[in-house]
Image: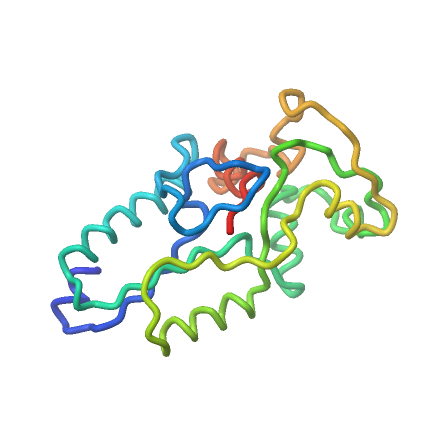
Length: 198
């Protein structure tokens, strides 16, 4: 598709990438857009995003006249999508009422549970600016602060962060292991739930 765009005389290409394209990074500090985009080998989603970024690297080298923008948003949320997001991370069988903020008493204090989120409207605005502007290159799209167990606990009316060794935390802690969705295969959730960039 990139080559077809160039052949058609397109002068600007805005690619929907993701922070999922990044290679594993540190959890105690931010990384910028220069961080390697090798993905995580165990994640289908991450490998796909990294592979497309590699193709785009070649395209940019071969077509310097085309303005290329890569937007790499963090996890995208909005209130209207809450039930779909709940199903994605908690599985289809966990009743929504159990996830009300006032009922969440504990957030697992896992060292690598650090990620960034962004509102869908902010992502939409970033795409608008990328299309209409003249910027080139890669841009991380994420809001502050980074979300860790302490920050997630503050989002709940009564939750506290509780220590639990990562090696003992089953994957179902975060996404309900019903095995019924490709998106919840091993690796996809590990990428989205445990990595943070900007």
